[in-house]
Length: 200
Length: 399
Image 1 (cartoon, helix red, strand yellow):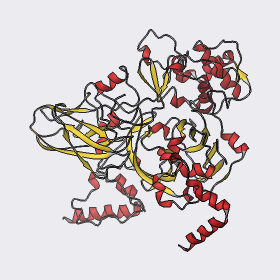
Image 2: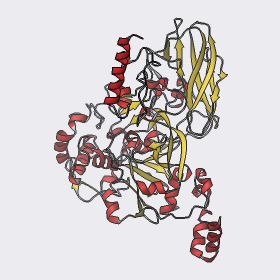
Image 3: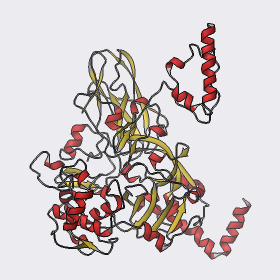
Image 4: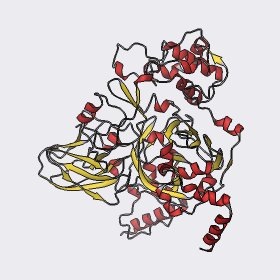
């Protein structure tokens, strides 16, 4: 109790503390979790943890966004990608990317079997940048994170080429990759379910 | 008791004392033949450092290459024992040294920060009981020979404890212009999902504990993102990085996966909320019941809030009665229900449907298919029926 009184006095005297205390007057969506309603006297900052350096962030920050942010320098092409694919990818995804046993990557022949179940890069993936991001972070399955930037560009170029979306000889890089318009892009819609009785 | 069996009992007991310091090895290895004829005539084993499951109880998950399913039909109450919590991984379960694990928060923030596990535990803690469910969680079987575990065993419930993400958001000073954040795991898939920032302010938890102890490796040890009521995949495990941004990052898991065709050539994306659902866990396949009194039991849950009602039909959906909801009935949590029924022995179908506080009633399979252009896929939560044959055999039936 005593400390609260002291704190209140400090707050009145110290504009900085006072500012921290009034930080709660924010829009409702910025107010604390209702679960924390019993800790209203918590400070604006605890000063636990430490600032992270640009170098530390750069070592972790591997994501690539649809606008191309995060893509590294360098380039690759489908001709080189085809060789890498045969060596490191075909075992799980099939000789031409359609056979499996794991995810089908290339649309290929859609007249056989249940065509509408095919979710390949060429007919289902809405952004080409995702192909680069995913290969770089997670593939090959047994050696994730082992590919060079050039290998990732080349594999991306090969898979886009195999889906009819990129010329075999053209160099793929940070500038042209985000500009590739994927066939499925306009099919994607944000969740349109609303709270209420409607079945959607 | 004969002298021989007394000696046998004494010998077995001494083996116990010699073999184990904890008692765990003994209990796990105990076979029926090692049991005393009369446990009141032989001293039991001493206290141990870890409790054990009775060797007579063998609830197990059913693993595939990428997931493992909770044996819903073997459980009671609303808490899933931590070792029976369902699993879904995209690059296996990583082995992480908690003293080396850190969470970086950066991007559209005033002050990019890194937190050790010890740092996270110093912040005010929050705790809640809530379900977690994989959004790809419906299976059927034409021959009816399928258990709740196979139908929807990618649902489990725990008490999750950690620091409110809103607390960390304030600590780093999240920009008012930030609308999405990327959550990234430290597993071999370095798995990522984009999450709307408002969920972080609302009720997201950076969880380090599950059912009173540190989170299990399969559930994200040492820290995971927990988003009450939202599809399991977005609850990124082994969380190592959060990046605030002004648009979704369009990761593989939110584009080529965890999206669903909904008719008209459209594919629904960012469908986070898990709709209301229920399943009768007793009686269910492979049980065979006898005519007479049967307590129909099951579980229900909704990602939109509280379950307000569970209706049970014992006449193929012609009439419905309210089941009893067993307290506690919690927000975005599994609730247990029961309905006492006197079966006359004639073949019928029994089924349950959950209704939540938004007025949403769990749909039948045909309704869902009609609403989604004939497509199945993620977020499929149909009413599930059990067919009771005249001989008491219980079989799954689609609705």
